[in-house]
Length: 348
Ligand code: EBR
Image 1 (tube, helix red, strand yellow):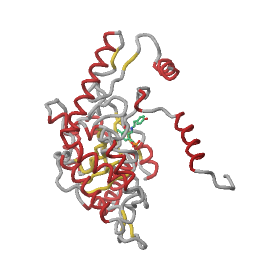
Image 2 (cartoon, helix red, strand yellow; image 1 turned 135 degrees about the vertical axis):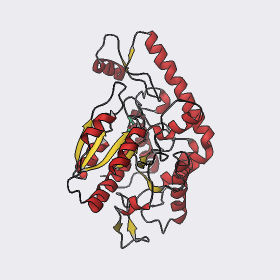
Image 3 (cartoon, rainbow, N blue to C red; image 1 turned 45 degrees about the horizontal axis):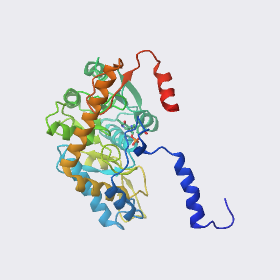
């Protein structure tokens, strides 16, 4: 590190050079990202709340109210009036929190010592991290011909150590939506936590459904669903890091809360301690600004572009892996290996 201070201008000269090495969402060269450039109003609100710490919400009461409001707003399109949860860093942390809560409840209520977690083979790798951190056996079950979890395989794998089942609403690679309704029935029958990872789909499926798209139900209207991951920093147009974890009621947070003696609150259930308040402010700003109508328009526009891309790829002789359900297109090149194609695209 430099001994003597460096001037503001010099520092920003340096920063500009580093930033010039980055890809920009606006340059059209980022092909496989679920994140986007944040909405201008979200950036403005983010910067305004940059010093706010939700890890000590008694000091930042207004920001805490914003977090609560964001959760309630998200709940309003996930069929729950009073969700309980937090804004977190993203889908990974949200998924880990959901599984931690399920593991603790299974341990406390059923005496399960070495729990098992059932996920589809299409699940995001954050569940591998969750299983590792929480000392769970990860059971990855097969998919059906449409790359959705096969409920039969879930049923076969449920046993007395199962602490949770995970269904995905918008898989990372293909944007598929698992049959959450079937999983919900199974979860109720077997008294097992059902977590839905809608990190990607959470900000589009509900709006597309409202506009008449034929998509399956995946939210809290299904009794078995106990928690949902939904990321404002994916389809929500909020800056990174903006994730969301919603639970059906307070008991799921209580199951993982620890005493927090030096804070203005008595206990804390998040994994992270000191945490950004800016994400809550930014998400509140962009959600209010766009409203449901704005998100619906964005989701529809994304689907129109998806179909445009998919149709033209087909016309050029590419083979789609699956007909897109959400705004993800996956395809095989007529003769190049996928790896080779990826490399050529990267070079371009
Ligand atoms: C990230 C996809 C992605 C790819 C994003 C490239 C940015 C890129 N997906 O530049 C699901 C269904 C996901 C997911 C991430 C996570 C983790 C959870 N569930 O912790 O915010 O597709 O990264 O979310 P994270």
